[in-house]
Image 1 (cartoon, rainbow, N blue to C red):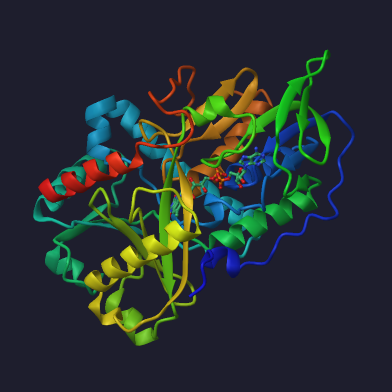
Image 2 (tube, rainbow, N blue to C red; image 1 turned 45 degrees about the vertical axis):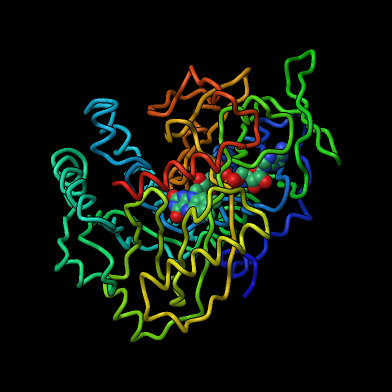
Amino acid sequence: MKSASFWLETAPTVSTTESALPEQPVDVLVVGGGFTGLSSALALAKRGASVALCEAGVVGGEASGRNGGQCNNGTAQDYAGLVAAYGEQKAQSFYQFYNQAVDSVERIVTSENIECDFRRAGKIKLAAKPEHFDKLVRTHEALTKAVDPGATLLDATALQKEIGSDQFYGGLLTPKGAQLHVGKMVYGLASRCLENGVAIFQHQPVINIDKTAEQNWVVTTPQQTINAKAILIATGGSGPGPFSWFRRRIVPVGSFAVTTEPLSEALCASLFPGNRSYVTSKNIGNYFRLTADRRLLFGGRARFAVSNPRSDLKSGEILREALDEMFPQLASTKIDYCWGGTVDMSADRLPKVGEHQGMFYAMGYSGHGVQMAIHMGEVMADMIDGKPVDCPWLTTQWPAVPFHFGKPWFLPFVGLYYKVQDMLH
Ligand SMILES: Cc1cc2nc3c(=O)[nH]c(=O)nc-3n(C[C@H](O)[C@H](O)[C@H](O)COP(=O)(O)OP(=O)(O)OC[C@H]3O[C@@H](n4cnc5c(N)ncnc54)[C@H](O)[C@@H]3O)c2cc1C
């Protein structure tokens, strides 16, 4: 078993050794080479801006290249809960923005000719308890009335046509959801960035940001200093550099995944006849899907811990147990890859977008960022360009998370709380 992201291991490597700085000041300096940064850099370069992008590690090396590869419509929270908390109109705008985000990914994949196994597979939320199915019934009613008329409720019998596990009491299918090979998407976006003149610098963490007398930004990495007219902070949940203001507002939470060896066609057909993306309804639940080469990618929070090689392997063992329980048919199937990553959680699990002291930012996707980060990249390009944007995540007030100073010491307690919730409800 390899302790590495399946996506990063099976995608071409991005080479940026030829990148040279355009004339300074550059129009925009992007900090962070995940989906937000790459998508924004591409959109800006395509409209003629000179763009430099600094990435602390390798492009896509954090959440964007380490996730579950699900590109679903729908928010991180349950839709009916959103309506109760924010009212019908706002909840609708949140949900519709996710629909748009999946459309944006599809459009970019097609127009930029990116080979990344993009597929509108649909997603099924699986009820792990009878009362969770009752909640799905309410969500289905709210969704079909307002924002997702194609959503379909599957009772336990109908679900048997979709999945070969006896652990679930029904499900909710939202057909607009998609899936993709995120490593290949990173490679595709980065390649198009380079072709359009973006100067990408890998292994160049931004360690200082200042202003010149002319009000340009001066951005320092260990290797160079870059002057820029505008800055986009696209650092996700990973946080070296002078970004303590953001670190106090984003909680970095570990999420973990494994992929099996390739399964036989017959096994795939019996276990996943619908070949969808799947998520379970528990707070500490799981997400899974088949890859294009028929491996099962199985992930989850597993433990409320941060990701590091030791933690990833421990979490991999927990995931293996959950996988065996759900699919005993896979008990003798080997695990080929095991990895972890950092989810950029905001306190209300809604994305955060705006300007702080003149620096533009987009982050806080809270585990639903494959589609939204790519979409927000384009929205941020409009914002930086001075165009009016219609984005429900725009925020002028973003309070710090109380008692959070960058290291999430409270995660084990949050984990315990959710474990108890899962036992009780
Ligand atoms: C295990 C896991 C599973 C997930 N599953 C899904 C899923 O199935 N579907 C879904 O929609 N979402 C999922 N997500 C969330 C999704 O991957 C993220 O929301 C999304 O990729 C965020 O993209 P980003 O570009 O904003 O951040 P990132 O991809 O984290 O990129 C930020 C980049 O900024 C760089 N950086 C940070 N500080 C600096 C600095 N000082 N200087 C230079 N560079 C810096 C980092 O190195 C990093 O590469 C998952 C996340 C994880 C971790």
